[in-house]
Image 1 (cartoon, one colour):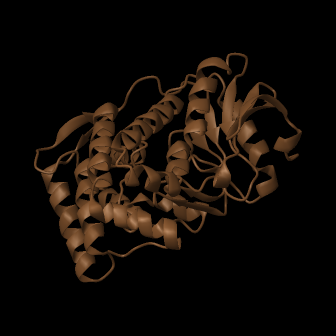
Image 2 (cartoon, rainbow, N blue to C red):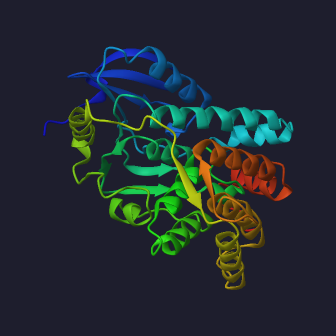
Length: 326
């Protein structure tokens, strides 16, 4: 398959951090251009704008780029500045806007295909998870690593993990709970696309290619094949197990703490994570809509962002480029 070079494609519209490109054959491409392709306010605003205004003449959209990494996640220096000012409303607005972007992508009426490769972390992975399909390079380092700075994934990432629990077959649900909780709590990053599939970041229907140069072209062809097919048009809901799953997850976190695999503050943040994945810390099994799960994400994120332990982690990382094990 002939590679597509994004620098040679016609630019339809652009802002400093992102551009919309015409790949031909009715397919457009959203290209991130921020430092490290981190998910900035400019990228979020631009994504919502193109979904609303710029894709009427296109049949589908791919999200991809050809720089070093797909996306390294969030800009922690900006987060540190907001924490120093105690501007917690900035965090609330940021979470709301990220959730709006991922939900808009998931329920967009035309096919949206992500083309992840190399580091695909944090908010970058949350965007990938909400696309209708992913065409991944075999070297795909995927992870929702927010717990490393004392937060939970709150751009729809934890919600998507909870949906996987709710959709699991009864005899497989406990294994899915263990997989997603351990993956998020231990900040696991896949070492390959195959491993990302085992971690439930990729589905068995997501193609994987060894040809990095042809990744955009293959994602474009996959998007073309999806044109006209039925896509998600209504909000999903699932039954989550409630108290029993929450208690199992918190007990497992305490076991990991005793083994020295996590720190005391990991265990604290893990209780917030467990409450979202279970739907409730003390309730019976119940049905939850996506919006209800997003509310749980926001509440947990906003509680953690005001904790001293989270401030210490973010401050340490911005100064030392390393994780604080508090």
